[in-house]
Structure formats: structure tokens, C-alpha cells
Amino acid sequence: MDHELRKRGTGFMSAPPLLVADGLVKHYVLRRSALGRPAAIVRAVDGVSFAVGAGETLALVGESGSGKSTVGRLVLRLIEPNAGRVLFEGRDIFALGASALRGFRRSAQLVFQDPYASLNPRMTVGDILAEPLALHAIVPPPRRSARVGELLDMVGLEPRFASRYPHELSGGQRQRIAIARALSVEPKLIVCDEPVSSLDVSIRAQVLNLLADLQRRLSLAYLFISHDLAVVKHIADRVAVMNFGRIVEAADAQALFAAPRHPYTRALMSAIPLPKPRARRDRMILAGDMPSALEPPAGCHFHTRCPFAVERCSSERPALVDDGAGRAVACHRWRELPASAGAEADDGTSPTLQRLMAAFGNQAREHLPSRRGVDTVEAGRPDGTPAR
Picture 1: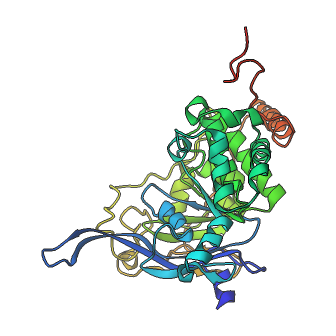
Picture 2 (picture 1 turned 90 degrees about the horizontal axis):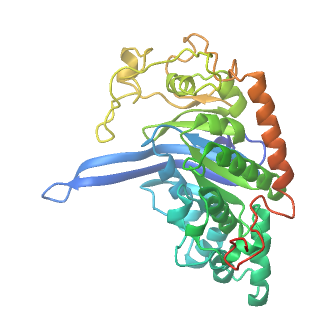
Picture 3 (picture 1 turned 90 degrees about the vertical axis):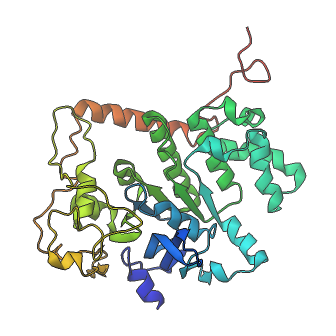
């Protein structure tokens, strides 16, 4: 059984996985009849299975409403499933008692999309970071202030930021605080729910570099949820593509971006912008409107917009089948489809832009792990404003 779970959904894993999701189902009842029976149901997650190894990044990608964030909340047991199970280090988290669940909370953390909404505006940064230390009794009270300084340094901020409030920080700084809070309890898994989608492009690159650096140093596992394939391309080890609550394709990131197989994945890839004005990519324009989540199409949910659909697609749900080489596709016709160039064939990056990107990456790498943070506060007033 465990061997099958390691193979199913997102490719073969030789070592025992840290996290296993097996057949997760989550339905929301939007309306009931006069007799109390469900009259309108949204199948947010419909039989999702995958595994994440220690020190690995699995990305869940798809359009808004595909069920990505719901999966993230299920694997942290923030919501209860209708069916399925989640194994963390071999234990079913939905069978844990209150005490064991508290221990699991320390091992698995969440970084939210909006760092300002997820930080208490009435608490200073120091209080925000010290709170989980006290809740889980990680360090004694006399050591908490020093530990807060260490956490800030770990995410590239100076200890002086501990006296700041969230509204006094930039978006990138707030997201670093959110990451530091997740790291404070020394987790093994972090679910990153659209962690950079609300940030400027330059700040986004710094946060992604920070996440990659922390993963190398601390052997963290990431479940990285995003709709931006350009971001996923640079951080993920494996990718699972979701559509209407189901995984339709899963593979090693490099293989998936080089040659996507599912028509939905191809459409997503073709929408990735190229960083070169004159570069052109053959767009796969989807016809028709996106179906309603209340009444998804029968068979393959994508068949109403798929240019390769046949009659079988509208009546028979395709199974997610592993090809034996670490790739899985839920499509009846993927072997018959013409080859796709993917996103690796020509990224359209000009030599000038490549040099700029390399220079920026080197600068970020020099600053992130250093003793002095990327963001500093000039000496002066207690609030950090420079003295005149």
C-alpha cells in the first residue's frame, strides 16, 4: 500500500515520504432543500493523492477555484475531509487526539498569501514571533528575545525590526516575518499558499531565493501552492496540475516544463509571458467559458474547452495513470497528441536581461545568509527613522 502511494499521483519516490495524501475529498454544501438535503454541492477536492518527501518542493498549480488552497488546508487539518486520509511521518493526522495534534501543528506550518492579513496589527514583530515559542514551550522565557533576533536574522532582517508593527513594514518585509513565524517552531513541512503573488516582482525574487536558501539549510519540505507557473518553474522539484478538484498531470518539474502532456497543462504553459518584447509563443486559446463548479462537465471536466476532445472524453472520467517513469497523466488521448515544445524550448530571455538576472541573483545570495540582513534600520530614533 505504501509503495503504491509513493508511486501514485506525483511520481515515484524511493525514500519513505514525509507527507502522503490519499484520496482526499472535500465537498461544500451551498444550499439545502426544505427537507435539509444537499441541493447544491461544490466538489472542491475530488480524490487527490500525492506524496512529499523530506527536503522536497511539490507545487500545486491551476486556475483560481481548482482546489489548491483547499488541499493545503486539508493536509494541515485546518478543515476536515469528506473522505481520504493524510499521513504525516506514517501517522494519520485525522486520527490524532488533541495532544498529538498539537505536536503535529509544530511540525507543519502555513505561510499565507496576504502577510498583512495574517499578522496581528496590534502586536509587534517581536511579540508575533515570540507567541509560538511560548505556546509550544520551545525556549525558556529568558531566551525568547534572543531567539526572536535569530529568527529575524535567518530571514534577512535585523533584530531591530522586533519593535516594529506590521503596518510599518513593506510587503516583502511582512512576508519575511510570516516565514520567520513559521520557522519559529522548527517545522519539517511548510505549506506556502501563494506566498509571493501579492509582492512586486523584485521582492518576489528575494522571497523565492530566501525560501530556497532556507530549504537547503534546514531540509524543509514545501507544498507550494501557486497559479504562476513562471514562479513554480524556479522553485519546484515536482509539479501537480489541478483542474476542478482533480490532479490532471504530475511529473518532475523539468520534465513537465519541457514537454507537458495534458491539454490543460499545455494551455497553462502557453500563457506564461516571455521576458522579451519580440519573442512569440504559440498560444493555446481555450474556447468557451469556464464551466460552473456547481455543475462541472461529466467525464473529463476539461473536455468542454479542450481542442483535442472526442466523444469518450465527455462520458468517461480519465484515470490518473503513472507511466512507470515518474509521470502521471489523466487524459485518454495524451499519447496521440502532437508534441509540445513546453516552456523550456525558448524562454525568450535576451542576453542583456540574463546578465541583469544573474547580477541580481548574486547580490541576493550574498546578502540573505549574512549576519547583516537584507533590510536594515539606520541608527537613530527608536522607531527606526534616521536621526537628523
